Image (cartoon, rainbow, N blue to C red; front, top):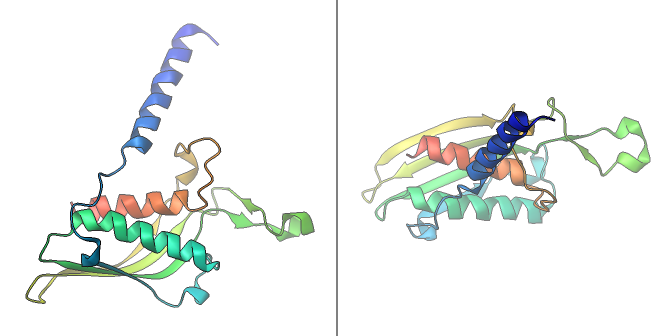
Length: 164
């Protein structure tokens, strides 16, 4: 490769890394002001292991707390989670537990939310179907052990857009 092309690639990689490293600050509001409910996790498309559902719930509760004022309460109900990637069991028994990442298997999360004020009045509410069709284009830290990276990024992006 020639020098200018390498420089452009290095700049693009640095910008992508900065976007991932742009982690929201620690929660400003009390985490108690955010309730995350898992609606029938046993019926989720994915996320069957309870520890993964709990990790996603805890992540969402911590991140959402920064968007909730002291006198507000946010309740988020996760109705379905379809993790990034899919199982291609037709490949044989050695692939039963291997999640294959392809464009046709984007992460998807169905949720509903309600933001209420101190007086109990509903300030915002709705249902959302979150999906990231370009999840494979996101930079993911090498050897990232987090199985929920794409789902957490999807939720973080929704929180930033919904509760600016």
